[in-house]
Length: 307
Ligand code: 3PG
Image (cartoon, rainbow, N blue to C red; front, side, top):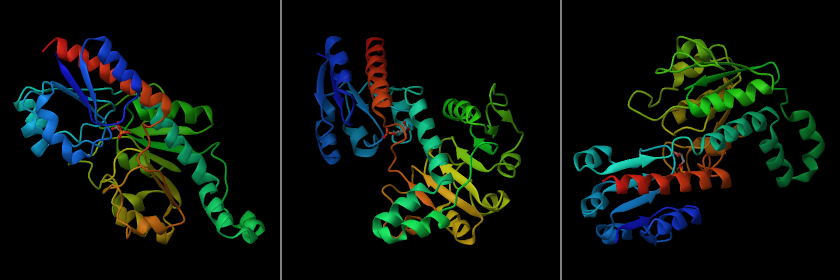
């Protein structure tokens, strides 16, 4: 019987779909990750999210592995050179979590604009500041402002549609897609960052994009700009972002990702009032997880049948 192991948390529907298709399914998402290499040799396919790192010892021991299903978008936790050389198929679910990530980026835009996290923290810590916070919190409207997108694929486009409905002008740059039906495309990143009140990143981490948002780019932006990173840690140089926050050049840094996850306790961004953090939950809505789990199961079945 063909055996499939699920090593990261998926919706139970994935188990149901795989079992109905006649596969033996091992739910191993509660198993410590270091134990997976000891059992992976038995399995024909595995389904993961971002927590399982499919490289090194795990891949060496995966002697029967034919298919890896990634419930989600990023393939940066898989050694694609090794899988390609060994003919292991890798399938993912690129569209399943688009809306979830776009909604988180929108949350960051709204939360930073009304200073809600800073207000919540201050009042919880000391309720007597309630009245003084009313004056202190920085507040404006998003209506009439400009959102700059770096990366205008599925997520960037979904965010653009939502933001246009809220009265923002949306401009963008994408190294691979020069046109977009809802975004006013610019011919360079510089043209976007110089003209936006909010900048949202929607691109993968590669050698080209590592620290793309560094000191030089940060100081090209409008003073007080809000930078949103629901893409990948490492695209933004965190120390440069901290320095720009301290100087007031950067108004807010809203991030769902860090260069090192979890971030080191001494990462200065953790102490800054104008940093909003979520722990890599962009894709993790109930709805997005359901779609990613179902699609990953279906794609793994298809790939196993054709291998
Ligand atoms: C992705 O690449 O799909 C996102 O970063 C989400 O990762 P996750 O599967 O761990 O939620």
